[in-house]
Amino acid sequence: MHSGIALSVRYNIEHPALRSGPKWQYFKISMRVEKLAQTVFTLLEDGAGVLLNLDTLCYYNLNRTGAAVWRDLEANTSRSLEEIVAAICDRFEVAEEAARIDARAFVEHLARFKMVRIG
Image (cartoon, rainbow, N blue to C red; front, side, top):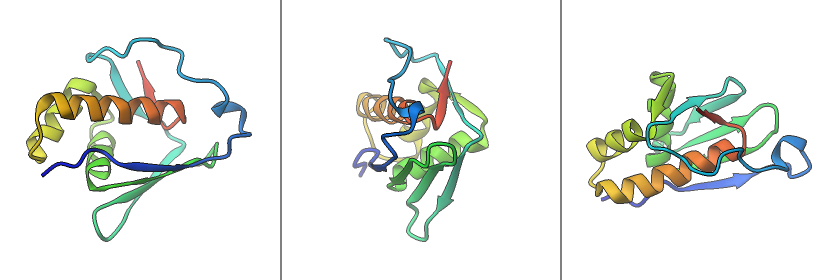
């Protein structure tokens, strides 16, 4: 059973990089998502994980689904949203539309906090 991609956020709101939102208005499913070098990941014993942006000191606690998505992104350098959705559907029992909604929100949030690049 898939319970969505959960994360909790802690960040330094005073950091200039976090004061503005993403520069795009529409996220196309074919756009590539790329991990940024300043983001580091630590896998926890229970399968969850923590992301840390070394520049902004923003960090995320990821559930197992979010950690699996992140590990896949690290292993493949960059992925399209379509590829991320397919990987979620292959690994977890989830409808494609639910996976697409969760993955899009997850990626957009990570982009807002400068952990991934979308292009």
